[in-house]
Length: 113
Length: 116
Image (cartoon, rainbow over all chains, first blue to last red; front, side):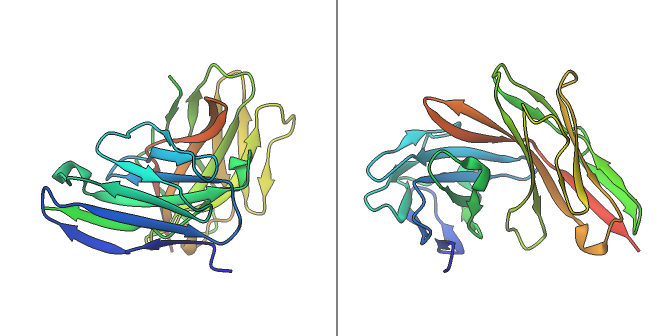
């Protein structure tokens, strides 16, 4: 049981490049979330999903797209990376209707130059 | 707008002493939940404790307890008998319901340093 895993752990992008961050969970959770964490800030919700095939915007969705084609995977895409997207990205998952049990992945550190 | 405020950017405590980390929240929801997470230097987010708005007693989990004062909208974390391994960032979060689903809103965090 790996819990929540994130790929990659580190990445450096140039402005304008695109990439996809992968979050995978093996706990059969319904809900999945993408957060970003910037220095001196708490985590801010980017997008979330309440089930396979569904996505919704969080607090800071601009510049990101997401997809949840399979229940166990939640993808976060950056179509044209900007330096303002330099951050640590956390994925989390929780059982349906119970964010109390929100399990976090180890994070992906992204630098955009 | 839902908001979580942690007014202490950094706190220092002597090993074996108790420390209180402040958290105030602003919500219009009648039913809500408050969480504390620990983030060590390794980066992972670790769930510590949860308090529901209708819980009559303050939540406790081992050395962690939550001083919940609903009228003041505060949910302070108390760590008793501090250990060196408690040095980390601590985040308070409010569970809100929006669009039929639940989401967490985080404060900016408090950096706790435990001195030997």
